Length: 435
Image (cartoon, rainbow, N blue to C red; front, side, top):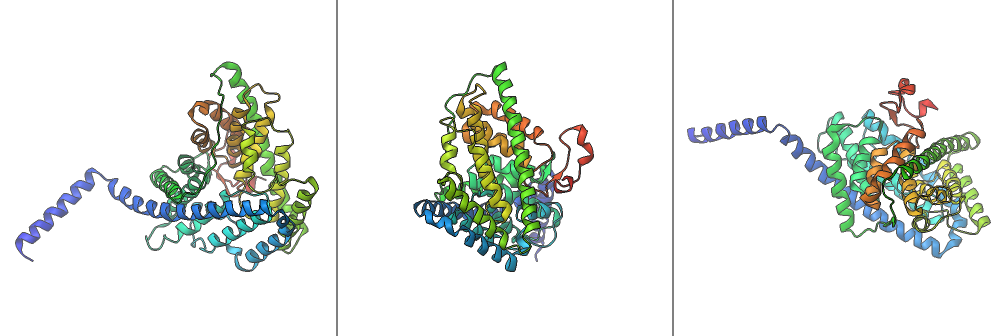
């Protein structure tokens, strides 16, 4: 090597050291930009495929309602699949949360196809479930496979899973900002990991963009009337928030209790969704409507337009609890949207706020209370309904979060900081250990 070449190399090396000393965040930004874009591309594509196929399954079932009779068989097949081949993935979203707190072995890749098949069977045959659980588990299973190629440390794997959750949530609901904050909030109640903010937002925004490029459809909601911010509407919003929080706590407690009952009374796991399928199928036949199975999107949209009967939310809650507690796959979030929107719509009978506003507040507030993610739900309300209702949505989410107590649909959530001083000794404990 000539003297001039060595001089050039030394100059470049010196310039690089000075440059990165002046801008120390650049290596971090470049590294996580590459990783987050990879997550966004893969997870966004997976979410698009899932949403498109889920729409097909829903439409096919509604046009062939006799399929509901086969729900117990579908449940048995799901149970057998997980019992013999998917025990290491059965924990679902709780496995993702555990991996964030204590990264150990890789999340098994077969979690993605297993939860996809299980969710498709659940909706195809008429179970009452959502889609968030599937999106998050597919995202986590796919993203964690990049841990070895990118040579990520345990701390980096934590950020990777947070970003995957953000991408999965943001892309499946079309709410990237809410998705990013959900990924940052959901695993540790009361605290946020700020070193994951850039990866989470980048992955969520890019995943949502990729999903839209695939032309996967998202539902649009509209709140036509939002009152001016005054004393009485604020008081009414607080009262509604209390009701939403109590509803969220009830849902979380009952679904865990029902799941334990299935486990106690039916020893062979594959028979649990079989039994649950019988209960749901008979209930659908008895009431003569498919209104309370599947995602229930038409009823959610209707809740923003007209006052729903006061029993709609309770019936949907019962269908969802039996379906998911028995072992069917999907998620709780979209059913929680149904429950919250229907409850809010019904509350317009006694609370003098516009029916659309109450439905929107319930839509996100019950979810906030059941998952302990009030910030993500505020953003979701603004992304879905517009900024005009932002303050009312925020009030409902915060109050619901407080009144839902330390309950959650995710048993492995850790209490990073208690909701108030009375429960300060709850810190660093999982929700499941507080039952």
